[in-house]
Image (tube, rainbow, N blue to C red; front, side, top):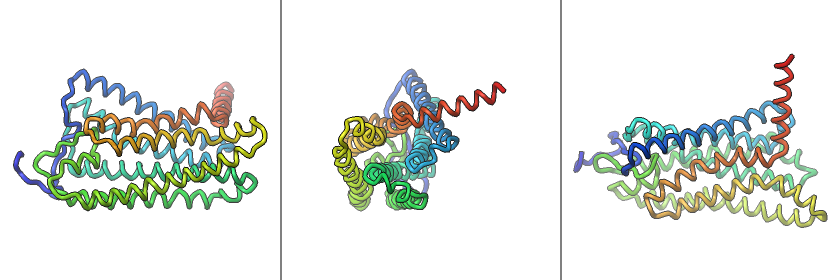
Length: 312
């Protein structure tokens, strides 16, 4: 296929993970990724189940957490199963349709993660700064008004980027130097002018990345300012602990995203992308389970309830 010009609209194929690894390394990656995938899915499914089954967790905070866990499962499911398939079979080829579909959902879920973390920051801001009016402000309508536009903008943004990508031209079999169809990798292998797409990405980063991060930062500035006004150290710590899990996830998410965005090494991108895809979904259930008394209490109640019914 060398020397043959193929337009993406005619259905080129993509070679994923296009650098040499031995059979032993493939097996090692397969086992590691499988364990990570199972841990992510089981941990987030546990949170979804607890929030659904325990009425005490039917609050705005856990509504957003349940959405985050659902998103994390879908997020890792767009990339890790294909990586495991490649490691198991050694088949690195991906069709045009599969590549575009994977990229579309990956970008959608990445954007939705940032928007959802912003909604959770707003929820924490209202809870800390306006505790007496929290239940009135953060009602069901407000929660859905924070969630639905986030999903809409995420799907819209991914659709626009896919429209740009489908107008790019490639030579022969396309080498994608990553473990999934990554936007940066596809732009680097295109033979046509991608300046319009690069310009849109700059604007996109400002809108999708900068504005949500500013809202999160502003929320936590007000939260910290309110916490410092609390007279007792016990009260300050109790209030801060209600935000610490979310703050941990936010720091990891944005630090990983910024590091990946600023990277100029294709080989480093593979490692950074794997960290970006797996770190937040893996930490989410751990952080919220180990550092959240409500989740632990709900787990004990449900286990006790199920054990009692079984013994009867």
